Amino acid sequence: MEDIRKGVCPLCWHNQVIQGWPLDFASGMQNPLALAHVQSFVTGPRQDKPLGPLLTYTCRRCGYTQWFVKDPETVPIDEKAHTRLIEGRPEPGGPYR
Ligand SMILES: [Zn+2]
Image (cartoon, rainbow, N blue to C red):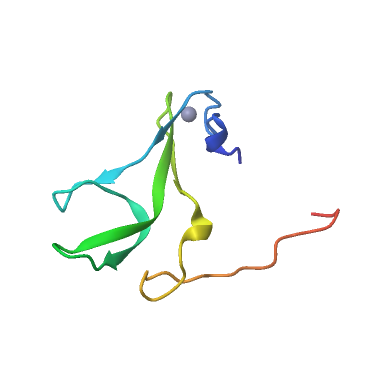
């Protein structure tokens, strides 16, 4: 499958893709949607720190959209972030894939 982040839609092959950064307004503040959040213990009202903000890539012709996490390698894997790492088979290597 074609990577939509390169500017080509994998469904209709259109060559215009819109990158977006969706926000959540539920708490009365603008917070980026993210893979995970941890509580930030600063004075004042409770705040959640987003970990791995989500980016969207949308084909400008057909509307097909994919979500990606910005800098996924920086997202911690632990109970505080409510994240769990699932490891699959090793990535193929060598000349025969
Ligand atoms: Zn498309």
